Length: 125
Image (cartoon, rainbow, N blue to C red; front, top):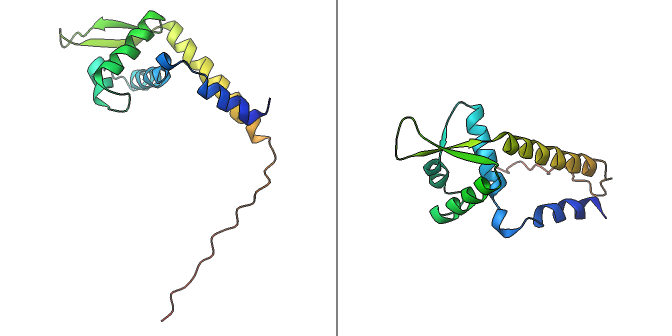
């Protein structure tokens, strides 16, 4: 299989119910690294993960896979905080490694197209 075909196959072979879940995991992970607790409403309010029901569906899927867990917020009894589990962190690291290996392999593919620098013109007076 061609290396380009492999990465496209990898990226498009994600079941519909889990599409976007990796992005939610990465969002939570990045917030955790910055010392920010991620609430469900934070994920919904970013608007890049879909509508409220879509986000809740993704979160429920991630909980069912034991990649995240929901805990009550210490600051707001109505809010739930999303926490990555050890399994979720390991999953993200595995995805990161796999994509890195694919991109690294693609870097070895010879390039047949040379992009010349853009010609500059000076305005005439």
